[in-house]
Length: 202
Image 1 (tube, rainbow, N blue to C red):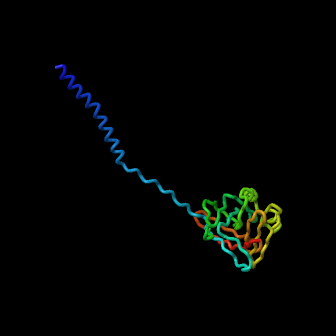
Image 2: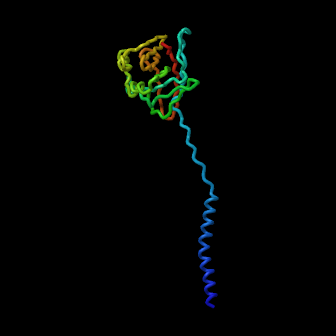
């Protein structure tokens, strides 16, 4: 009689041990059967400026630089005649001479460029990064360019003027006297700009 009770107790104990285990297995199976949701795709950023750099008409006897891989720089205007250069607001043109800027704050920017190879990038940006350019007149601009403050080339073709420094080339195209090429950025809109390069190999 005592054995029978022990046997029944053993069955009862075994049942109590197995039931939670079976319940746990069911929960694990249920979790494994639930599909993992796909990762949320990262949205492609919308450019705020798209553009292209092309050669302006010049004499065919003049050697022109390659405009693929040209450095494009936005100089943010801080007043009617001044702007500040930032390395963070720079990009390069692709094999089709196209370029794009992303995540640029709204405002007005003067468009600068350099189609010439840069031998020492550190020294180049040490000269230009955070530099303020003053477009009030040619003398002010010459001083603000830094270095010797001397504009090496000043070509006038109709209403277009271009200037650059010899040691740290950075070109400025003028649409007319004292009016440099610029572009405005408005939140939610994409602006377009075309640089007509008068650059030639000096």
